[in-house]
Each structure stands twice: as structure tokens, then as C-alpha cells.
Image (cartoon, rainbow, N blue to C red):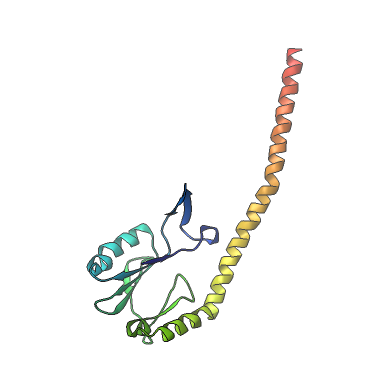
Length: 173
């Protein structure tokens, strides 16, 4: 099984928190992919509804027994999306993530990798990467501004404490 998430500083809805030596995901990842065999009924029904309720946006289940890739849009409802005629699942949450269902079922690694690489070279993927970089740049700029203001605020607080101390000394004199 696999999950993909957009980092929270790039606009994603989940983040990784560390507690001691262990890292935890807080919030819902954007995409979850399950490989399912004996639990297919649970994965396609209860688990899909749980992921929808929890905020997962896109859900993919590879059913081993049926040799079938099932794809769900959980953004508004939990409806199943139809794979295009070419059998290539093109992720709507991760533009450029292309999964060739026919190559997967046929265990054609070369075709599967070729399709994935084509997706990563697509203009949609380049635009997605640029959007993530722009979101990160905005956050970095905000952090830089905050770091400039913080010393000024600390200096202002120190000056205020000195002023209060001087006023208190005069009133007792």
C-alpha cells in the first residue's frame, strides 16, 4: 500500500509530526493506493467511505484477484472514475502521475515505466511542480519576513521592559 501527500508548506492538507524517534502523519494524504486481495470488499466499500470522510482526495485500489485497477474521486463524493480507453490512469491530484493499468495487469514493467516517465515529462507535471515551488516560495518569503520582524519585536519588548523599569524607579524615588 502507498500514500502520496503534498507537503503542507506547498498547500497540502497533511503534515508529518515527529514524536521522539517516530514520525506520524497528521491530516489526510491527498492520494491512497491499496493493493487488495482478500480485503477487496472492505477496501472498495467501507475503507473507501472512511477515506472520503477523512479527507483523502483520490483513492486507487488494485484488485489482485480481478486484475483490475479501480479509481475513485473522493473530493465531492466517492464515485468511481472510469479509466480512459488507453487504460492510463492520470492522477488528478498529482498531475503527471500516470499509471498504465494494462501494463500493470500484463506485468509489462517496461511499458509501465515508459508510461510513468511520459507522465513525468508532461506539461501538466511541469506546471504542477511550478505551482508547488511557487507555494513554497511564498511560505519562505513569509518566514523570512517574520524572521526580520521577530528581532525588532524582541528589541521592542526589551526596550519596553527597560522603560517600565525606569518609570518604576522614578515613582519610588
